[in-house]
Image 1 (cartoon, helix red, strand yellow):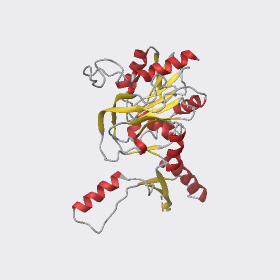
Image 2 (tube, each protein chain N blue to C red):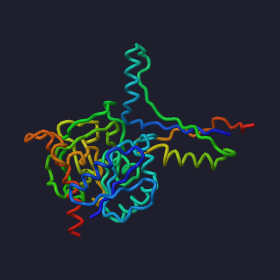
Image 3 (cartoon, rainbow over the protein chains, first blue to last red):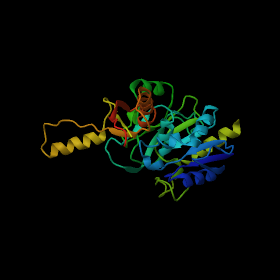
Image 4 (cartoon, rainbow over the protein chains, first blue to last red):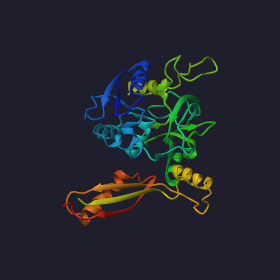
Length: 231
Length: 87
């Protein structure tokens, strides 16, 4: 199983995503925004950061980079794609998922260990969770407020495309506390919080058991591997 | 060379946190007659050659496809700033 991680100018968490892929048991493959080559990977991660300085809109220019033509094409064929934070914004800008992102309602950058509820455990990236399970992974963003018109929100709520919801605190003013969404097919998932930062004991969020021991994010990557092996 | 201005605004029904922050500053300055502020974007695009209806239509399309995101923004104006050709 080979999982590609695309590096854009301004990507910050591409190496962490590669590390998470390795910890989950797959081989990470570095992909480059300026290429048209996905190197035959079985799944793709669009990592967090501030691609192209987030000029124009967060993720807007990255969504129109050469590699994204291939990512959109692969997603259409069912290849699993995970967009984390800036990658989530790219998925929205590329119209692979519904909605868009604006500045956080409170105007501030925010970083916190965020509790999420898994709303759909049927996607390629969430199948290792159970529906309703609460997980904790780090969140850090400025433009994290997910918005969509009322009709779109009603549709994605009705069709199970809301993958994750914020629990306790809505950190950015996202509509319906939505933290992550998927496409209709369930192979493309985007979310604002960072699962790749909760994959290794000692470097994750605090848990009641021990400091920095949270590894809830690892399940994203093991899910996609198990899905691929089952096919 | 002529310049075309494309103006983009956040959708009216959407919270504009930046505008809200500026409106808050106005209120703190005692400028109470100004009750609301919304902040948009202005793109000045230099065009090679004449600005024809076709060029304006192309910029309208680019305004809707690239300069703005239709989920959160509207293109409110596409207009010629300076049609005087350079020397």
